[in-house]
Amino acid sequence: MQMDDMVQWEQEAAGVEPAAPPSLENYREDAENMSKGEQDMSQTRMKQAITVGMDEKGYPIKKWVYGYSMQDLVENAARIYNEINPPTNQKVVEVVRYVEQKPKDCCFKTYAERWLRLYKENTVRHTTLSEYKSVLNKHLIPELGDKMLSQITTDVIQEMLISRKEYAKKTLHELIMVLGMILDGAVEDGYLRFNPAKSARIRNPSTKKMMRKVLEEQELVEVIQGLPKLSQARDRRFLALLIYTGMRREEVLGLKWTDIDTEHRLIHVDRAITFRGNRAVVGEPKTENGRRYIPMCKALFKWLTHEETNKEYVVQDQISQQIVKRMWERISTEIEVFGTTPYCYRHMFTTLCRRSGMDEKTMQIIGGWSDIETMRNIYTHIQAKDVCRASGIIDAMFDPENLG
Image 1: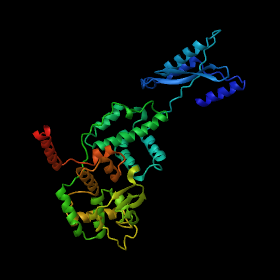
Image 2 (image 1 turned 90 degrees about the horizontal axis):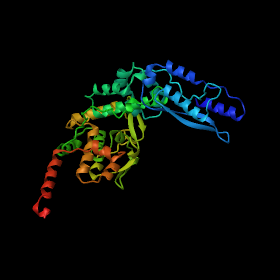
Image 3 (image 1 turned 135 degrees about the horizontal axis):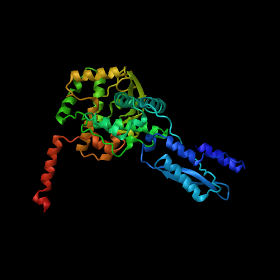
Image 4 (image 1 turned 135 degrees about the vertical axis):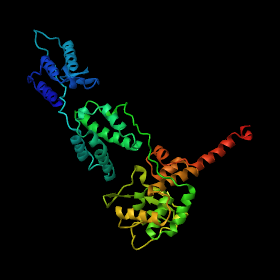
């Protein structure tokens, strides 16, 4: 499309008679031969530039043409061209055609798998790639895999979401996000005129939220009291770091002895260990703010014992997914952890920080969140004790002495 235009300009500049472009009648014939679906697939207004002449310096004069279909576009182009260059001697009106032909339709499964392979496999973290693959294989391909891209409408997407309304809101949000990225590519490649996953009508129908277990304060006390009962030192180090720092599990596993500054009582979070299958992968923290310093409380010091088996890493030098799984199973067997997982202690740490009056910006820095809103929505919890404390504040608010 653009290349043809450049060639024409070069020919005009060189004094070469350019080849005559297709006539208006040819345009009309093309438009009539288009399927109804192609003409009516969207009411979104199309626009394209045409060359209507040359200026004094020999540069092309461009005009924008608008239309709701190929027929509209061609007729409006002819009208604008005629207004500037009136036809003579019954000559067929010539307009420059800039409408790119839509490529043939493509199966969603084929397009989605190619998108994943070309644009994600070597550009995102392996944990993110795993999430994309999960969304594709569990939701999108089973539901949309056999459909052509042109068949995926806003209604089809909304029906798919409604059929999965029992899933957590976060799961459906990820589904919409991944589908939106795939269909953005389809728009760019010319398969679609607009992205139906980006429609303002799309609604997440889930009312379910995945709530992680948050310990009551007395339960946390009992877990802390259970630390000396753990048979293995690495288990004690692992659980103590989770409790007293609020670090993510992968950050605790990636912590090295050189990251611990006992003089200034600081822990430097600089890496994370995730897993590809059973194999450990050392990488960067989860977010841009993941690299940070965390203050060490005095209660943590006594659990940071150094052994021959962990010369480099605090928890263990040679780690795997299976080792971590067995470690938590052993901890859960030897002491009462009240059904928690390692991630629950991050939630509890943040809740205690808020309850203690720590300002949100400091909480965000210590926790390594990318934004405060994420911390507010996911990682702090209102418990019965908070409500009881609030009642005392309300009593004080309406005390006659304070009102006076």
